[in-house]
Length: 467
Image 1 (cartoon, helix red, strand yellow):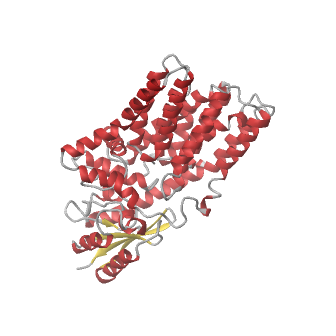
Image 2: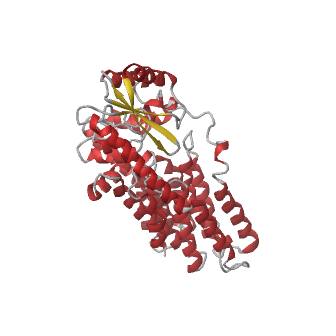
Image 3: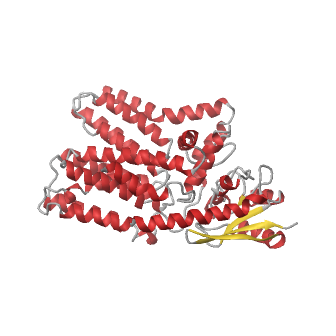
């Protein structure tokens, strides 16, 4: 049943190149890696190397299109749902645990992991860590904890913000060993081993970059630039997200009430573990200075498990809460609408790419100042800059975090006279007015309208250069 749910819930977006935004960059870099280009050196972003390696692997197996990474993300989602079921079984019966797995699948899509967002990959790794360290009395608890720390290290190579959860799982494992009678010396040695395994994947990537003389590029992209990026004015808690977070808030509040009044957890240690993990997951969400909506997917497994007393069919309300919660999640997701919108979006971006393609090639590069990064692949264009993600050159929050001035890089690109420039009428982020002015003036002086498309509530315009 969970496998069927994964297929049905994720089907609307399979093959949709514009299903989401960030993943288009990860896909572009993953494809470029298969042709010898390196993240941070040839194409810039601050996400860890492991994320791009996942996309490169997906494209190596499944081809250059979006279905490759979307199917891989689907496999991760299936694994995450199965592990949610496995953890739930310590607190509820099979039917309720299956409902928890189904809820995981639906909520992950609702909270932005419907296609290939980073949370689709690192959240299942956190679930795997939870499974491994949950029981400190397990006869192989130390071996399992060491494996969990290595998985945490791999998760850090997908997104560094999982660090609070990794720290929690490590501390839980150490506390468990203390409860089992380990002395201080033993705990210190274990903590050191945990840290080494957790840092090992990142250290290995850094060593590889150092070996080819690109250590500075690795450090700047992965660490320095994170702190150079300016925070958004609204900070971490945007009022615009209140309605969006309502389903999670309902699960939290009703789950807490049910645990206290309706169906107290039968395994209090496991439920306490879930509560603490949920707090660590919240730290992951709010780790960055700017919090985007899809970050909240990190809360999904912890909240689903926290709400088990609410949806437990053995409680006083029997099946009713489980049915209502699943029905509510399905209603919010509303797959028929998602499928219809995806079909329209696919056709629209394909028409836009067809209009641009005759004017660009391997030597004459399209430049997307704002719009879908997937257009580079879809049009067969070369890449005009290593800062290929539009947000890096138009977002005011990024102006001091690239190692170059946005205006200088834009001026360099415009001096090459790109045959087509793509812009959007509505910005997704606070814009750098000087960067916008450079582009607007150049378009007014040397470009004419080529094509226009409506994509995700934004008008995307392509401009053709007129000599």
